[in-house]
Length: 103
Image (cartoon, rainbow, N blue to C red; front, side, top):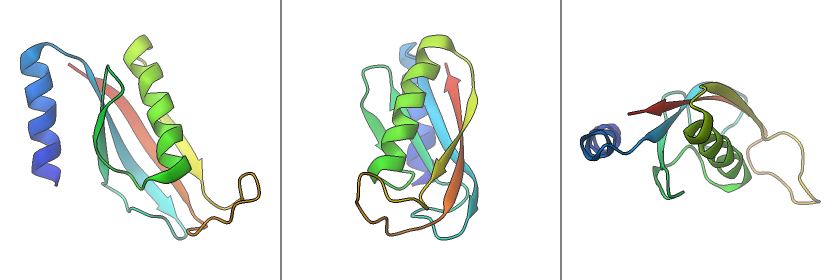
């Protein structure tokens, strides 16, 4: 999957289209993906790869759209320890995700 992520980035750069690379930088506790998992988010909102799915991935996707707009990299902390709107979370850990624009 990592090679496919980098091919996706290269393809976007060759087309002159900015993309955002989100990389799980650190995990604590039980998380859906581990350190090094990657996701590429395109300007049109589509994405390739995964950092775990669900609400946490949606939170990172929203930050990625902001990074496309302002170009400022950031670390997004995804807390999977608290139930959201009464739903039980399966994982119960925390992920720090580095989000940066490429191209």
